[in-house]
Length: 392
Image 1 (cartoon, rainbow, N blue to C red):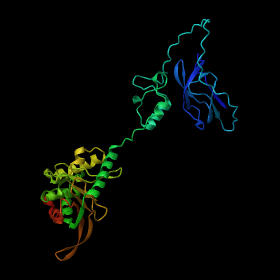
Image 2: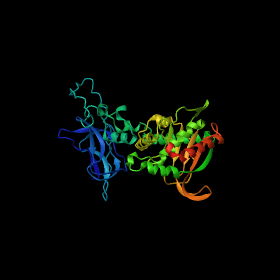
Image 3: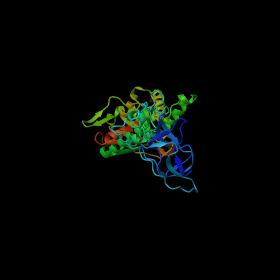
């Protein structure tokens, strides 16, 4: 079809008023696309296109009263010739007042046009045109908060287009990563880091774990990471300068030891929620707390206290990865313990070289709260604890 005309929307329909265009020249339309909204005695009705093609011209202006068959738009199908442009239908002029001596004909009183049932839907549904609803979804707007200028107060496209899209809603994981990124930037800019490392022999710890876990189901086994965490807690209890917060008032050691545990998320990134009051837990309870924390961290179900009340952080690369790592301190904490992946390497024992499982232990410390002596003592205590795992 060359000219798309005002369709008949019912046997009793004679005309309608164009209140909204949903297409513009150059748009491609297909059968079933809604191209305009027209007000009739039955209310606002969406006009569908029944052909495919390209909109070349809009022949009717908003506000025009259009009888059935009036030209609305020129839609050119492939290979079709466009007819001469009809005269655009203008909004109906205001009728001239009749002569003073002429008696005006009585005019029937017409009821105000109601909003179409498909726009003013069930209670709780905001009356709106399809284009307005689509645009609102694109912008993330709630139609309930907008005022409508269409028939019966219905919201039309123009009402939505004047609104600004709200900022994109972040997921809990996004918010978590955003907070961690800000903290890490602030950490490197404001905390004077220094690093000390020590290689320790974890063969006694791994041998003890093999014996301890023998015959136990997987859910009751203790992992090497739990020994590392327990040693961190006990060493922090002895070297109090690594456990606490540095604030505007200076360093404040903490009576509680809430070790943060770096957890890699499946969606990417890293979080370091804390196990609260870990100094009161034995090794088995600490292992259970670790499992619970990791599960909830990866499910995005962490508590605010776990993200804000850590007093020292442990980051371990697990069974595979680099030999050593030097982490970034989580402010306002003053220390982070990094443990590389264990590996079989030559080690001197009583003058003889033996293959042993070794790990490199590194502490990142805040020089405002610690110096090399305290950090070195922490590493020494940690090493001593791992050499006697049965005491953990």
